[in-house]
Image (cartoon, rainbow, N blue to C red; front, side):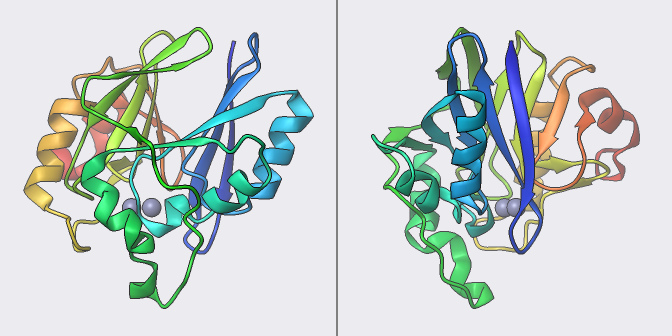
Length: 210
Ligand SMILES: [Zn+2]
Ligand SMILES: [Zn+2]
C-alpha cells in the first residue's frame, strides 16, 4: 500500500508529505518544510526507511527542514530537484527576501527531468515539469494510486503566486493546463499549501481556470 502522512509546518504553513511503500518500508519526504527530526521520528514509528528527499521546487518554505532530515539519517538521503531551480536552492530558496536563514541540507544530486520516473518501492511517480511559480517546479504523479503532489502550482480554489523571482503568470496557467488538467478528474491533488482537492474539482471551480 502507498501510505501518505501529511504535516503542515513552518512559518507559512507548508504541507510536507512522508510517503512510503508500506510493503517494502521504503519512504521519501516530499518538501520537508520544517521539523526534520520529527519527520524522521514519524518514519521510525512505522518502521520506514527514508532514502530520498524529493523537492517540488526550491522555495525556502519547502526545503527548510531538509538539513535536519539529513542530520538524523545515516546514510543521508539523496535530494532530487529540477536543475532549473538549482540557482534558487543556492540562494536558500529566497529566505533572505523574507529576512530568514535556513539550512537547505545536502546538495541535490538527482536531476529531475520532465517525463522521468521516480521509484518508491513498487510505485512509479512520473515527474512533470510545471514552471511558472518557479522555473524548475515539478509535480510527482503516481498513476497507479491516482495522486499528484503538486507543490505550489495549484491549490484548492487558487494557484501559486507568480510575483517572486522566476515566476510568470502565463507560464503557470499553461503548466496547469498541460500538466494538471490532463490528469483524470478523480486524481487527488496534494498541494504545498491548504487542503487536498481533485483535478475535477479544480477544473469546475477554480476561478483562475475559467
Ligand atoms: Zn513556492
Ligand atoms: Zn510554498
